[in-house]
Each structure stands twice: as structure tokens, then as C-alpha cells.
Length: 467
Picture 1 (cartoon, rainbow, N blue to C red):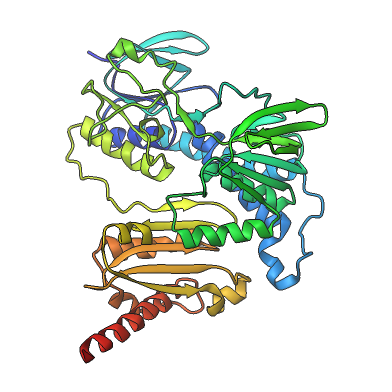
Picture 2 (cartoon, rainbow, N blue to C red):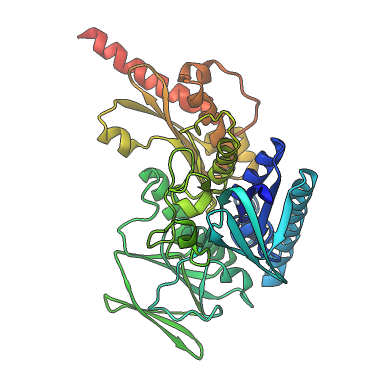
């Protein structure tokens, strides 16, 4: 009756995993994706390019080695956009090959073009040629694009968004970043490491509000050390383009000259061209689609996953959403997604956390103790030249369960998974205290932090017993 059992709009992390999961269950599956965008925004303009750019910056600037070899140490004196782009394009190319191979091995049909609903079961694909395809089940995984305020005139050279920043002609000497969210701070730290004088403008009073305050303060200290200037509680009134650069005018009257202004004003769901009305669906003002616990929309056979459904809008969670949506669509038993999803922020230095923060536990009146380990106390920290990194454990004062893990420094996004696993298994810090970790490693920080928390709780227990 239908051309396909399942059709996926978009080949990003969510769409790709949905397609493969359904194909593994023996279904006829197709993916609609624009030409030269296989892998979606994640591979081509978002996660992979920005994280690869970060690695290129760290390597070429020699930033991580300066603790050992001196503040003037650099691998390459004059770093160009071509130097940064070479590594990025190599990784993008390899990742696209991997995705194409995975889809091919699983007999997933790739339809090149832009898809739009003609009715609830029919998709019109506009590419080199027009065609109509029908599917019993449909998954929307179109992702997002950078939001562009209507009051700002973007030219993709002097005034840009986070997509265009990958195509700059040269490394700017001065840069204004508007917005201190994850993407804004990641790029601010990268360009600051390159030697660009960066000014961050944020209307709120602090950056990364969802992160542990102590961790954010540590990051802010390091960014200031890289000559980043912060303007919190400020709104941009106008951006004026001049022959020699852009002038950012703040509502407070301040004026900030810069070679380039990057807006990081959130992201907009890419649903405008989907003709959702034809399928009986609608998106909110940010282009997001509402779904239930199984990622089904208001039209039961149409699902939506990934950034297009909103928070948390992470590649990792999108992958799992895609897999679970496909299983539900194929009438397979579905387990709920684990609540303990880690957050990784690829700033320089990086941040990662899982579980509760101190503020959340205090607000909920949950008693806890803090255990801290600093990289400078670990042999591996000295070996790699990271004297500023830290790991913080938040531990229940009542039953010693691990309630939260917050990491700042080298390898934070890898290290956090040890704590995630202990928490997911309902473990206590007794396990970490008694476990043997390889030496020398950063993973040892768990034992050090667990002992720190345990010793604090032992003192409290002793004083309580004396009463």
C-alpha cells in the first residue's frame, strides 16, 4: 500500500538512528536529505565541525602545553583559517562516508532533496527532480538553524551566525559574541585561544545558568586569562557595519568596535518548509513540534525527534530519541530513555556534568556533602600540564548515594561517564572509595573526591555521636 514502512525527514543524529533502527527490524526505510547535507547540521555545520575546530585550535596554539613549555609556546606561529579548515573538512568527509556506509549496509534508501508534506502519509521531495513518496510511518528529524533576529543585518562576513563562522576568510583580531549560551561561549573560548580579543555580550547576569556556579566561575577566570571581556546585563541596541569593521552599540550606550560580530541567539526549528498543515500538524513560534513520551506527534503515525522538539537538543539525546521513536513506530517493546543524560560543553577548558547541582539540591532541601579532587594533586594532571582541572562529587548525607558529578578541565566530557554509570546503578561513594583505578590517570580523581566527601561525613558523624 505504501512505498515505505518508515520515512525519515533529515539524516542528522536522530534521523539516522531512527532509520537504521527500523531497518534492523526488517522495515522498508527511506531518508530524505538535501544534497551535500548527509549527516545533517550535526556533521556539516554544527557539532562535528565546531569540536574539530576546537581540537585544531588546541593543537596549533599549543595551549595545553604551555604549563610545561612556557607561555610563548606555539606549534604554529601564524594560524590561518586554512589551517583550521583542513582538519575540519577531513573529519566531516570521513564522518559522511561512515553514515553513507551505515545507511547502505542497512538498505536504507536516500532520497536527495527537500521534503514537505502533501498529506499525512505523502511526502513531496524537491531535488534534481520532483517526486512523491508515501509511507505508513513518518519521523520528522529536520533539526534547527541559528535564530537570526530580524533587527540585525547579517552579511555572513562581518555580521555572522554560528554556521557562517566556519567560513570566515581570516581569523579576526577582534570579535564580539552576542549571547553567552553553550555555542556562544564555545566559540568565544576557541577564538580567544587563537589570540583574538573577544567581548561577550549577554543580557542575563551570568553565563551557562544551568551549570554549577563554581565550575562556571572557574571557566570565567580562565577565559578572562585569555583576555575575554564580559558584558553581562547588557542588550544590543544596534550593529553598525563600517568599512573597517562593525560597531556594536549597547542599550547602555557602550560602543564596541570589532572585525566581526557573531550572534548566538538560540536556534529555530527547521519546520517552515515542511507544510505541516497538510499533515494536520503545527509548530510553535520557535519552530518546535510537540510530542508525547513516545515521540509521537498529535498525528499518531508521525513522530518527531532531535532538536526540532526542543530541550535538551543534544546530538547524544537525539540519537536515543530516534532509536526509541523507530522502535515504537515498528510496534517493538520500548524502554524509557534514562533520565541521567550527561551534558558536555566543549569550551576551553571543557565542562561536563550529570545529575543535580548544588543549587538544585539546596532548593529541594536535600542534605549533601561535597567531595573535590583537583587535577594538580594527581600525577596525570602534572604529566599533561593541567593544574586547573577539578572534579566535584555531590553525595547524599543520608545514604552516601552519588547525586551529581561536575567536571572542569581536560577530558571532562569523557570522565563524567564513570560517575554517570555509578549513579545509574544506584551506587554510593563506598564503591569509589574502595575501587582501584589505573595510575596515573585522571579517573583517579573519583577516588580522591570520594575520600574527601567520606572524610567530611565521618567528622560530622563523630561530632553528632558526641552530643
